[in-house]
Length: 433
Image 1: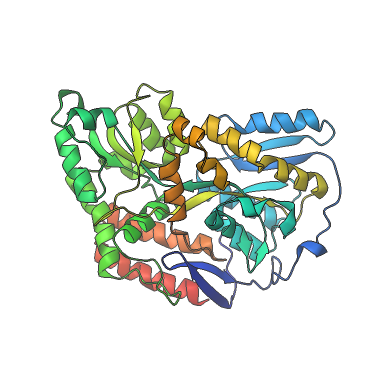
Image 2: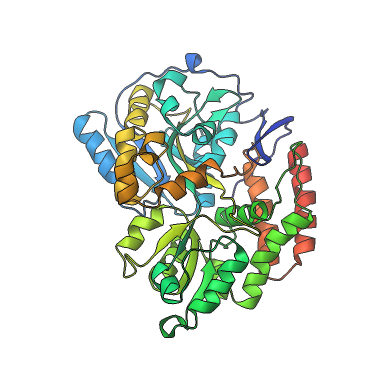
């Protein structure tokens, strides 16, 4: 992956339980400071554009694009699908920006990339009044901002959920999902005594060395009372609390709570394992719900908040924002398409057909929707109490450091203590630049 290294003067603030929110202006090669404003951007030009996102595993995005294309035959949108893993998506988007190519128009950014792309002037600042931000969940809207400016519009949000085999828990005499890690392992032991569950594994998340590991590591640390950065914005992962979180994952691999093959799992691997009856519990995003309902375990599972050390855990804040490439053509068309794609009507469609988390508050508060999609109240709480990952200009280097050290601990090449000590040193260097 291309890593952009620059001398940066960092100014950090914190949100939600102490993770680094914003960081740095850039200097040199790719664009200078972020003094750009929406008034200086010329949203002109109409004609064909592209929408760039990770591979659509839900099969719903093209439907929305087709609706747009039918209404705007002279301003058609072409869907460019990138790989499923976030690291590869980010790499290809950065490569496109560094060459100032106009091949990419509207970008679907992981929420944590907004600051990085804005600081490097790879995306345009947007007019605040162009989108109904007042109708969206506040934590979701904040992910679209950088230094007080709007550089993206929320397309979807995301909060981690605990999927569990409700049919098997009920048969084992368990009346409610686990709230703690110890309760989860105890529930697994009971379920595995059932003849139909003897060959099942207990739990999995996303543990391959990619962005999903940063998410799962951060959730474990936060759910054990630790933080990735302290109240002053400095890295603070070499702590007893962070060690308890990482030890939960490490020990779970050692004792078989997490199956050995889960070290290779990304989101889709875990989903398929859960749907095929290999797992009792799965940590994943809400998109899994609709797909699992169409699988052999449809009607046999439910969702709950993520468990933690002493009670309900904390999700990492996920989701995707729509941003406009600074190098794109036909920006008037692009802005209109962003309004269309991020509208409440589109969000409702994605909720109903792909169980994607909507950014709009009232979709969570609709009793009829809650009845139809019983995971919505759990998802709303997950998002409102989620902890953002570090939103920094050098995010690629930060997440790479987290992935490297977390993976070393999970794979057994380092102790948890050494991995956290080394990660602390790496993050101190990166956030001091």
